[in-house]
Each structure stands twice: as structure tokens, then as C-alpha cells.
Image (cartoon, rainbow, N blue to C red; front, side):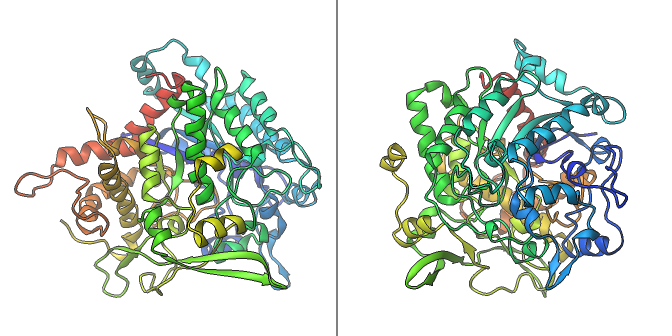
Length: 558
């Protein structure tokens, strides 16, 4: 059985935030399951609430290596769950409603909730390590002094190995949620986590999906669309203010990257575009101050692409800009990005394939930036992130996509004035096309091919290294996603090898971006190199992830 690596999924999150109708916990041997009206709503929203990567599902899957995230539920998610007009339908979901109420009423801090969930993971370590799961959480200390070859042998036994990650800097906030008291020293919470020998974290997302007024580390990108807002509604999902990294955010980043023995990688997923561009410059500054930082890569664990450069997007105005004013004062701003068609299927009615052009997804320059640092890009299996915008007639779109909110100061600087973050800001602060049912797999393949073409265009590659070595799956299973058609849970990852072999060559022919660059290899007569295709598929599904994990376990030594 071939193995799969996943750079972003949630092993126990749903078990932690759910309860059965009688109020008891779902055991880790069980799958979280909606019933009755809840099951109907789960189907309506694309299946986000049922288990997709529970320990039982993982134990029956090809997922043997990966990165599993821990995060505390944000106030925005607890604010209003499944309210339709005057009807409160939240009780039909198997949530821990007492826990959600505690968050909504500010009776706990995010750091407390994070530590409680971390303890939940660690308390189940013994059970998870045994049959039928054989799941182990990785720590660098357990592999000290081992060579890369030795670690590879250890990771390729019959067990499953997952590195822990932190999704969202809000998890470091020690003050009660919405208490009005500011969090002043989140880097201390991070240092305590790094110093604790009981666990080890590979990465940290500085931002997540909502505004955290008590602790602003940097601006986030809007991720929740209109459909998602029906399930969880809050204005805090819409970025309103801020300009890039804050001084507090820089302290957290510096602490993460410069810890002597357990540095933590910054995962740039969920940062706003301006914040990401600023982070790349700030990391360069830290490298100049401390050359050891250079060995620590930039990653994005669960991503989609915009299929355009930042330069083109800003200068050529591939968006409409709007603002909300009250008494002639601008209080909010949006951009409405253009739809971009990137391919097609053989479905005569619904043939066009489009990306998701929101700025939560990555621009071509960023793909190059991540590859340049030796990082990995996990490509999401969430259909919304990849570009699916509806059930019917998904390919018939207006010129522009759904609008997204942009932090006001970033909107003015980047999208109105066209000013990129500068150094001074850092210092101051053959096939047959797929059917409609298979269109999501084709979108995945388009993302892979695009990233590879961008990598070939933007960087000089030496030896065996290539853009193909920096891509992997980043499913976000059990992160309340709408999985792509046919890959509903980790059990379906076994299908990917065959699907990629079928559709990657089609994507390499059809993709409209950088058509003069081919991602796959061909003979002089144009015949596809099947052995190369097999090799890069294996790289994407597993080998790239294994190499990345080994580098981390060796504390980023060559």
C-alpha cells in the first residue's frame, strides 16, 4: 500500500468540540456524525460537520505521515451558529454547546482553550499509539543525532507519525476573550510551549479566520464566504482594519524563528496579502540579523492559487474597489476580484474551470518565495479554496467574483495607492477531459501544474531539486471544509494516485497560464514520460512530505 503525507488536517478537533445528543463525548474510536435535521444540513453545506480524519478513519487510510493542527474555537464561530431569521437551529449539530457558550461569553482565554485541547491530545497518546491506530506525535528530541537515512527508515515502519502545529496566533492570548484587556506578551506563551519537553510544534499560523481585538498580530484574509456565513455568522470574519504585521506580531515571529533548540516555522496561510508580503521582508531582516534563521523555510500548509502575479493584479486592476462610508468617513472596504478561467471540462453545459481569486489564495511571486526558502505548499482539498463556487452551472460566471473585505489601511495602501510593503515599513514596525463530477480533481491538477510552471519560470533549479519537490496535499480535513468531489474523507486519499495520473497530463495541456512552459516531461515527438509522471505523483503524495519532516526532525540541518 502506498503512503500519503498531509501537511494540514485535524485529528481530534471535532472530538474536542462535539458532544453526543445525551451530552457525552464522542470516543476517539468513534466518528463524529450528524443525525436527523443535522445530517440534512451537513449535506446542504457540503459535509463539513461529520468526521473526515478521525483516528478510526486515519487508521483505515493511506495517511501515514503529516501535520495535524490544534486550535481553539474563535469567538466568531461561537457567536451565532445556524440561525435562520428568528430560528436557532444550532442544537441540531452535535456541538459542545456549553463550551461554545463559554467562548461566546468570554469566560475563558484562547490560550486556556488551546492548552486544554493540547492536553486532550497528549492524554490520548497512549491509546492512539496502540492498535488499531498506531499514531504517534513526533518530537525532535526523539530523533536527535539520527541521520536522514536512519529517520526515513524509522518513519517507514507500520506506524503513523504526525507533527503537531498551531493554527492561529490567537491560541497564544492569555486574557479572557473580548474582556477589553489586551494581550501584551504572547511571545512568552509561545516560548513556554517551545521550552516544554512534553511536546514539539512544527509550525504556527500567525493569523486565522477572524478578528481578535484583544491580540492583533497581523491582518488576516477573509476566508468565509456567504454560504459559510449561514452556518457561522459574525462580522469578525470580515477584516476591517490594520496594516500588516504589528509589533506584537513581530515579537511572536522572532520568538518562533530564533528559539535555540525548537524553532517553529511560520505558516503564511490566512495572513492578508499585504501581511504576507511584509512577512517575507521581515524574515529577510531576521536572516540578516541571525543567519541561522535562513535554514527555516516559509510554508503554506493548505492553499489555493490566484493564477496571477501580484504585480499584474494590482497594476492592471484585476478587481473592483468599493468602500463603506459613514458621515464621509470610510469605515470599511472591499475588493471584487475578476473571475479567472483556467481550464475546461468536456461537460457541454458546465465546462469552464475557474480559480478562487480571493487574496487568501497565493500569487505567483509567493509560490516562488516559498520554494526559494525550501518550503512546501500544501494544496487544499476544500472545493471552495480551489475555485468551486456552486453546485449547478458553476462555470457560468460574471466578470467578477464574490467581493471580499480587505483591512481598511491595507485597502488604501495596496489596492488604491498600489504601494507594496517596503523595507522602511519593516524597520518601522491526452486525454479525455473530466466530467462534471470530476471537475474538482481537475481543479486540483490545475493548481499543481500552475505552481510547477511558476517555479520553473521564476527560479533556477540545480541537481535533483525542482518545483515538484515543494508541493504536497494539505487537505484541511476536519477543519469544517467542503471536500472536493470523491475525496470526502482520508479513506479516499487512496484514489488520488490514479486520478492524478489521469488528469495531470490533461491539465498540463489545458492550463492557460504560462502555456510555453510544460510541467511534465515529454519526448521529442511529444510523448509523455510516464516514469517521470509516476515519480512526481509519488513526490506530491508522500516523498516531499517525508523529506520535509526529516529536515524538521533534524532541526533543519542539511
